[in-house]
Image (tube, rainbow, N blue to C red; front, side, top):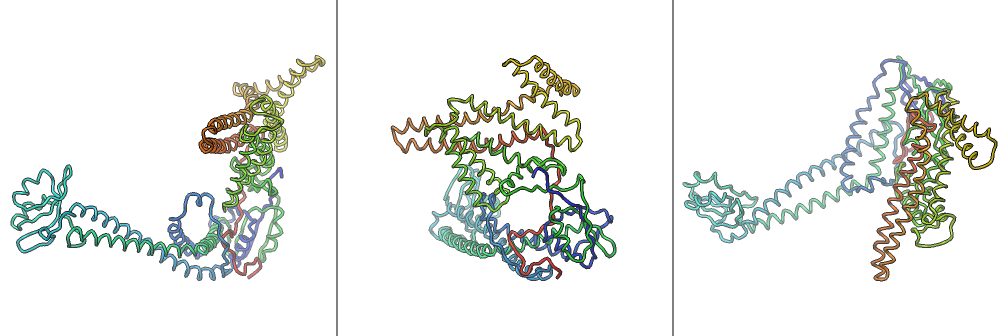
Length: 613
């Protein structure tokens, strides 16, 4: 639990004729992290099925783009739960044939819908523009200006500039229907003999229907209704495809698994008749690899710095692995800090929130998020917050806080009346937390033979012990020898830091400031209590006027405090672990364990097995 999982270095040799079957079984085991082999400079080309993989994944991507049109931001964030689909065909060839028929059919419908939507959008925009323009000529009710050509006369509707109106009126019969600052909208009646001279000054309005404007508008409105019906038809088609979304995702996942397996071949060495896989597997999973037929297996101990890191904890602590990963994975022989952050993070979070009501609200919200989400990362975060909110409720009882001072009951601490008690408690926690990091630094440095860091960790412990003894000599009657001991220990630290130069000397007040920074726990707790007090005071003062009126600032105010509490508690709890704690012993830099994996979130294979086929 305090170290990453023990790994073994693995080398697998097999004949090429069994390669697809062997790699498929390795992928199903989900235990082997494959490394790039140096057995041969050039690996053979991957399976010819790769072009089918890429083609089908591209089609599925286009289908999903159409389905995403209805997804909202919340669903994108927390994910959507899907049932697992059973797919026929254990071999690639059996799966390929059936899946391509299904995907090609859906893809054709998708392309037709996308094409139709594009045409509809363009058509609808043109009709709306035409209706808008024809409304300028709705006042035309007689055939005098009906849009039509005769042998001697040209009639129609158009737009002319204000500056050209006087000249045009001299030779063309017009009826003005609308005017604005620059343009005049007219119905015109012109002799063909005059038309060539003035046609450049009149922008003719072309309409879909060669009828009077009012009638044309009614026809165009009917066209819009037809477009609406086509939209409904497309929407129904999309819903028909959406009903098959689980199958689409299942097929996509299977294709992604095949793609992952084929890409893994690039990392394998090969000779004329054999292939070689090198990698790492957890020590307790090696027996599973032994069961794969037609292979020669070599297993070795590993202390390689390239060894991938697999964190292993029980269900309660496992979500906190995410917080370790956000900072950095430990190196293979380093201490895994997940257990310590699993203890400290909820503790700090609980002290910062320290309110029964806020804790309950955060617990309910995080539980709802956990129940709704299908994404592993969001599930882990919600579990962390659920655990931390329970601790917040506990500290709310200790601090006597329920929406601040809304309810009064006896408690061990009181953030508003006795902040000094909470400050001392925060500093005590900070002292324990910091020194735990120093002790881990001593252990880690000694084990990895990092003697400069070992000396630093010991010197900081000497400084603390020296300061404690010195304070005791000033506050109690103890032998004078202890004063010299304390000064000696402090001097050891100063000399150790002096060898680093000015930066080393500056680290001494920085070390003390790091410990004092734990006062933020008290500061945030007190700030929350006083903010809640103000909100309650406003609500109570308004309650004499109206309970409804008083509930508005009460609900908004406490909702705001809950949100800011959640954010600040999460951020500051992380900071105290990452900056003040990790800085004493932890560097990180490990490479994540990523085995060749069979994803089966959306599908399972009918007749799936790990034996020889």
